Length: 184
Image (cartoon, rainbow, N blue to C red):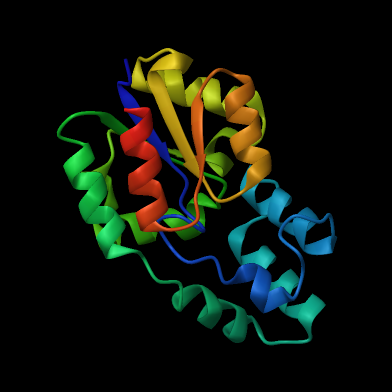
């Protein structure tokens, strides 16, 4: 029986303009993947990350910040999560800098949609590391077979599945609703 649904942030709850902005393939290793890994594990501060990305792209830090300010939260999906929370525990599990994301969560009051919020840089580990999934399951007080994980990156979905977590590779709201209906 499913007791919890875990959502990714970038590319699911909000747009993910970073990869288009940098011109780097989200699924291929590259310099920006190394920078993202550093900031998402907390090894690099948010401000240093912005400066490093700007330098790599020959842009200003303000241009990089503007790209992040243009990320759009999917309000329809948040409404759906609110409905799901009536029946399931919900969690946000994201690879992100807490310095960036915690103010967004506070300003948008996103904490009202989730029982748990797990931000990778607070833990020093990122998806697809199995430990971050296990940490989230423990916080939700559910076993792996009692959870569904939703992410837009195949490597993260595959890692969750290896742990016995039912997972959905996110593409659209309609696709998510259809697949969740099938799994719940």
